[in-house]
Length: 294
Image (cartoon, rainbow, N blue to C red; front, side):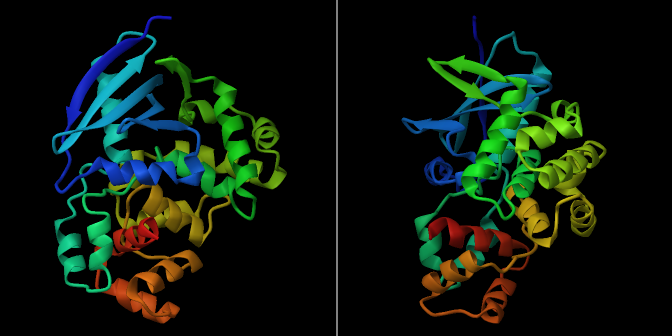
């Protein structure tokens, strides 16, 4: 099968360094095995305007060079949608100036900034994928959640081989809502989670991703909390890791441990919240940096 190619350069808000993003991707369990990192480049399949595209991403100056591959000739809307997906996935537009200024004035956190300098948060490839993982991974071994996620992707066969390697894209919402509830239950291997995921997908299909990305924080959080199978922890997880909404810092054991190591003392939940407060709207980035550096 012939493969068509399109290459574009995407700018990034400085400072930007792709290297820490690649290190993060290599250790990110929810997407393990779903992309390749080789010779300083990330290669991953994605969905764009109903098409399966393989994106190869490498540092180019202060931004990235995006090389797209597809089984059919590209149209401008597909290129634009794929570029937007990559830009959002890698948070290329995040202006970290204010965050870095706060961090440089924080002796306990400054070494973390030095270690991750230029790192822009790597979100889930799509917020939809984050929603699926949030439901599938609840009180479940990671291996079982990953198996269920792979089964959902395999159902639609969104695959493309580039340079001898086959890449599979996670389905888009238009595909997933075609699945009857019984089929979702069968693929996920869990009656309760399958039912929750089916209901959440149909609610998700009724909203707009632009609203989720940029709408009033409280309204977006309320929408997420109204989804079947999504509680406060999962809502915050999707807000931060799927949508880049950094307004709040959920207190959890892993973050408490990472912060205690960075600040050189055992922190209580109250102490963690106090440290986070000084970062205001950047506290989600502060927490993500702490965990990424741990």
